[in-house]
Amino acid sequence: MSSRLTTAGEENPLIDSGKIKLLGVKMEKENHGLSETETLQPIPDRLVVLTFDDGNKSDYTYVGPLLKRYGFGATFFITEGLNFLNNKAHYLTWEEIRQLHDEGFEIGNHTRHHKHTNTQSKSELLADLIHIDKRCEAYGIPVPETFGYPADCRGPEAIEALSEKGYRFARRGIGPEFPFHPEGGRGPVYDPDVYHPLVIPSSIPGPNYKFEDLVWAVDQAKDGKIAVLTFHGVPALEHPWVDVPPEQFETYMNYLRDNGCTVIALRDLAKYVDTSETTGKSITYWP
Image 1 (cartoon, one colour):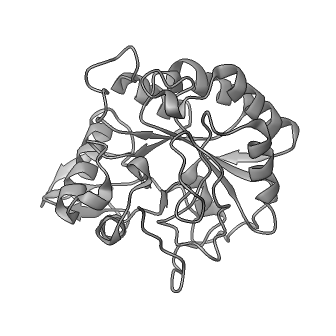
Image 2 (tube, rainbow, N blue to C red; image 1 turned 90 degrees about the vertical axis):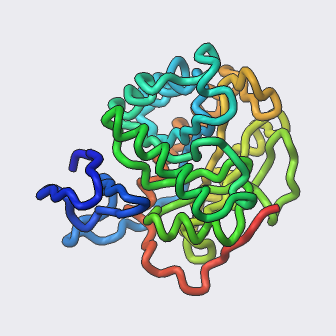
């Protein structure tokens, strides 16, 4: 289903149950889940989710083409915060983001301003989310159905806002289960039987993350558990504390390819994970 923006009250025969209504706008989301006749697929061992935060220029110039060659899926979480609007040598243009979508990658929401969501009111966060929705719509990109927490910060109001807005999945970082390190590190494996789908943990490659940490993360992805990785720039030109050099990144991707990993975008978890059953699932706030 294609996406378009309509004003509140305007009727559109293409709008179906995927419609949402917030702050005077109606937006449609593409359906990347299961049809009514399909069932969830069993989670294979070595299932890996790749995500990339902040809209670094390398998403388009290096990461996307490499992943395309390997047949890997990925989610690119876009914000207009940081220096996105001012430094197009380091950050994507919206035309480049559209091209990533056209190549089959997922575009996710990372908020307008990249603020820590645990410091925002629900209405402020919703406005930030809707801004990115509208930017996507303006460039023919589907309204995002997944979210990445800026700086991993989250509180009760943020999760309430995401739930109200209809997000299927939201990815966080390593805390509180693993000690925070500003240059990345190991994080929990995602167990859908344990974690709420709006608080999916991940590991964060960076200067504090080595090849053996990637091997460790993949080794955890078995018996129904999923490895989720949060990258930033390859390289991250403005944020060296989350930088991954291209040669190191290619080594990581070669390992995933050579060891039979299934590598997907965050949205593709809908093929494996039932998001309707959330009672008792773990929700953590950080910091």
